[in-house]
Image (cartoon, rainbow, N blue to C red; front, side, top):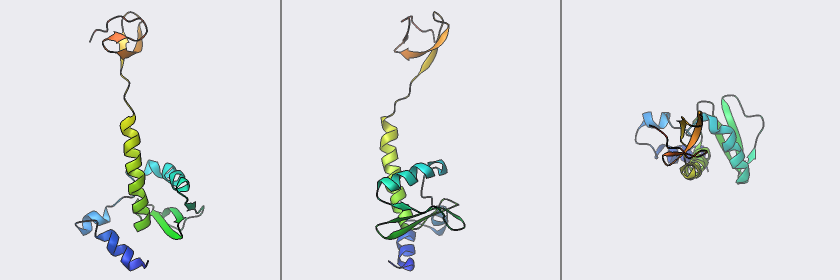
Length: 126
């Protein structure tokens, strides 16, 4: 696929040049290493020495994917980023928060089980 047609396909996803210029492959730059590992699991080859201004360069199915330092990328990087972000969204929704409260009987922070301490089963005062 030519670079010009890739640009047109990627640009068509955004309603304005401003939105296009602010596009990001990942929701957080902290996810870059995990994203690279996920790409390897998908069969991608990660290049160890990306070019100047690149955070990540990879090949997948004989296509080149690039994530630049500013967080944007080429069409393949954005397509894979969308798949990665949707997978991460499903994983995060399965995680439930654990609530801790101070138990006056145990004199410690304990996991809240209903309205009782999970250790001594005393009722927690709110």
